Structures are given as C-alpha cells and as structure tokens.
Amino acid sequence: MADKHLSSQFDSELRTVSTRVLEMGGMVESQIRTAVYALSQFNPEAADQVIEMEARVNALEVEIDRELSSIIARRQPTAIDLRLLMAISKTTANLERVGDEAEKIARMVKSIAESGTTRSLPASDLRLEADLASALLRKALDAFARLDAATAVAILKEDDAIDREFDGFVRKLITYMMEDPRTISASLDLLFVAKAIERIGDHAKNIAEFIIYVVKGTDVRHKPIENVESVLK
Image (cartoon, rainbow, N blue to C red; front, top):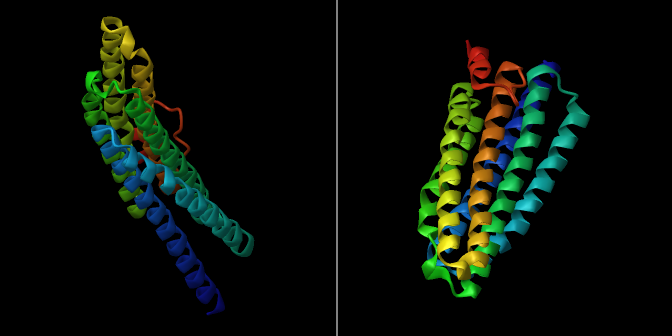
C-alpha cells in the first residue's frame, strides 16, 4: 500500500511539473504573438513588451529545472518516467530559446523602426512564415500534453514548409537590397527576424523529437524522416 501511495505522489509531481511546462509554453506563445504584431506594425511599444516578458520566461525555466532536480533526487525514476523528466528538461530549454528568438525579433523591430525605412521593406511577407512557426509550436505543445507520438512525427515533416518560406524570403530580400542599397542595413535586421522565426520552427521540431523519445524510447534526432516513421510501426 505504501508503494502505491508513493507512486500516486510521484504521478502527481509529474503532472504538476508538466503543467508548469505548458504554462511556460503559453508565455512563450504570447511572446511570439506580440513580437509578430510588433513586426506587422513596426510598433516599438509592443516590442518592449516582448523584451520585458523574457525575464519571466527565464525565471520559469529555472523553477522547472529546480523541481526536476528535486524529483530525480527523491524518486530516482527509471525507464519511461526518467525519459519523461529528461524530455521535460529539454523541452523547457527549447521553450526558453524560443523566447530568446521572440526577444530577438522585438529588438530587430525596434532597430528597423528607428531606421525610418519601414515602408520600403517586405516585412508583411514574413507573416506566413511566422504563422507556420507559431502553429507548429502550438502543435508541439499539444502533442507534449498528450504524449502524442504520431502528431510529433507530423511536426517533423511540417518544419520543411517553414524552411522553404525562409529561403524564399531571403531571395526576395536580396532583390530589395540590390534595387535600393539604402535599405541594406534595415534589410539585414529583417533577415535576422526571418532567421529567428525559422529557428522557432526548429525548436518546435526538437520538442517533437523528445516526445517520440518518451513514448517509444528511441532517440530520433538527426535521423531521416523514413527512419522516424518506422519507429511508430
């Protein structure tokens, strides 16, 4: 009976820390939304909100890591429970980096707004890439909440669409800079924005890989998608 009680406590602790991860994910999603709004309007005030939120995201990462260390020390988990705790740690690290990318976007928005060249830049062309990256992160968080390996595999495939949008935008931006060299400085800032959005997609992909690791016990990082799909069979 004591073992059952300890197991119930452990399950409760796992649920609690998983909920904290999803809370962190919600904060990061809010950062992205605000950063994209700041970009669409070249709004420095919205950009400042994103930058201010970064401290809260960082603090939550530290709190979750502390909780994980405590659980591992007290419970000495094995097998799937240990994999889940490892995946939670990796997921929080990736969410913190997503927050960093959102902050980067905000800082670039402020730089572009100060340059006075906002009207001549194709910033609106980044909307699709941003929407794809935001949706992919949302899907990764949903898959994490359900430990849904099938959805995680789908996320790995969908990341390619973000990469294609990024490549297309870079080509368009090069054309803008060639046609009007006065836009080069602001265009480079916008290039960093595009890369930050692309990296958000990469972090969503990383989270998906950790989900597969928890559920299937197989590390699928750096493996072709065909090999990853075979893990689910």
